[in-house]
Image 1 (tube, rainbow, N blue to C red):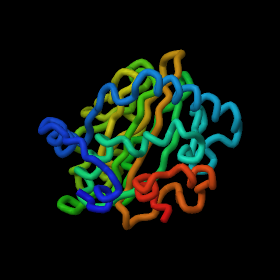
Image 2 (image 1 turned 180 degrees about the vertical axis):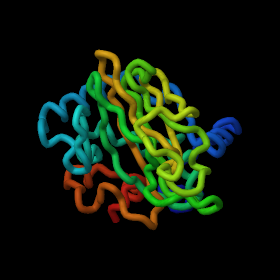
Image 3 (image 1 turned 90 degrees about the vertical axis):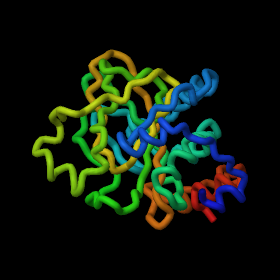
Image 4 (image 1 turned 30 degrees about the vertical axis):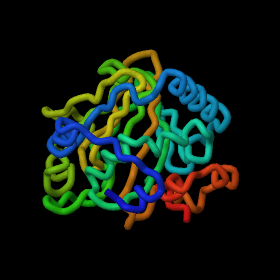
Length: 252
């Protein structure tokens, strides 16, 4: 474990042997019941309020996607998000995959509108996978609504983080279904954690209901962040950060 994390008060939450095996072999796990009901309601309200307030600018700090309600830089947009990037089991899983010091990569929101949401299969780590080398990114999806096959729960290809090279070395049409893909389904309040080298993508929302999620990603400490927290950090945010949060955000 990262000694700096421990010195700043982090208490690891041991993963079960089955969870460790799933992260290593399949590349993902789903943690159920992470978001308590009251917190879940607050996160949903905050998601909708931020999108309503920001309008056409929502998500612009990172990316905007047609047919998707996107949010970005959520570290600075409410205390309700503070415990997302500090969740103990999540941080323990991140270290299990990366095996070295890490920091927050970004904290964003994603909600495919009905009939939208299909993405190409991709990996969050943009470089070719080299078997035997350490991994670089871990992502997590915080399910603010039920994730079902009908509303386009994220798909992934189990074990694809072990495949050398890039997704494009194996698929010509990355919008097409992969014969081995599975959907990361779960009840609202669950969190899916996956290796950033795993092939995955958002899927089409064929329901009339929202599928709100938070993407909380981490990256090995030697790499730049997707959202540079030092550049974006607001004074009000800085004032409330614990020593542990300051380290995770890399704002010192």
